Amino acid sequence: MGEHLEKICKEEGATVAKGVIPLVVRASGGSVRDALSVLGQLLAGAGPDGVSYEIAIQLLGFTDGALLDDAVDALAARDGATLFKTVDRVIESGHDPRRFAGDFLERLRDLMIVDALAATNANSILRELPDDQLERMRTQATNIGAANLSRCADIAAEGLTQMRGATAPRLILELICGRMLLPGGDNTEAGMLSRIERLERVENITIPAPVTSPAPVAAPKSEPPTKSSKETVGGGDFKEAVPKSPSQAVSVKEEALPKSPSQTVSSVPKSFDIAGLRRLWPDVIENVKKRRRLTWSLLSASAQIVAVDEKLITIGIVNAGARDSFVRSESEEILRQAFIEIVGIDRKIEVVVDASIDMTSTPEARAVRKDEAPSDKNLLSGAALLAAELGATVIKEKNKG
Image (cartoon, rainbow, N blue to C red):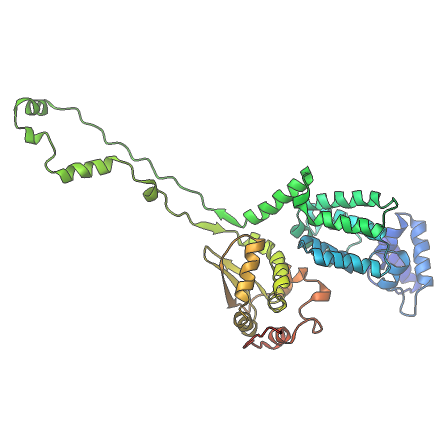
């Protein structure tokens, strides 16, 4: 139907912004006649530049995609402050809480589909969504997890039925968000699956190497006593039947006795799953953002995990200026504490310059919201802006007050 409506707009010479046609198809409920009627109403109220996405959102009453992305990103990072601020923005912008809850439920449904299928195969079901949005939704679905997506969808569906009563819809919406953020307080099967999935994501970061048990030592065969030995013990020289010296007897006993556990059990090195650690990198970045804005601005769009071992986590930054600013501002401790809280591993942070990093293709760069991108000069502080754009270094940082 979308292709049919686009063909009609092209034939009529009507200018329609990107994303408007999927809204028309969604509002029509699958009816071609209703879709043509909705499209005609939008064209009738359009200005000289045609039908913009913002006008279509307002006229049709749908929730802006940016608000849904903010809510999903906050849910993935378990950032309650951002999620409740998003709810406040929904109310202040004049959106209906029931409509937002319904659109949020549909977004969770779409994320479940994207998680079950590859981002490219999801086009067969979610035909109206562009490829860049599907890729962004794939990252969001990976960060939230399949079990938690199903649990949050159940909570949203239950909350929608409760909004039909006399209770204020905003109150129900905020309670829904609170329940989504606290899987630890949910004793149902869905809540337990969500907690187990979270633990598995963290536990898969370190995979212990297989322990090879030492080969059993064969006991020495006892030789049958010979006739000469019997005669010697009976009436001959007794010195030939006993060991020649006490040291030889002790050495024989030491060879016969097994070694102590402290000698046999050695420290087994662990092999680290760097791919699993990179999957949690967006959560680590969100945690760093709560601790220090400067550190977050240096990491969110110019760094990624390069290597990890038993002692170090190596972070690559694209230029030397940002690396020096990171080191001078003592941001290693901030990042280390974030890894301890989110991942559960305590490693020393080492920062290196890696100019070969293509930050536009990394998941963490795509996960950064457009309205909070560190390249936005209105959001960066002076030190972060100079470090990101010109490679400046922070010589000294002084806290105000």
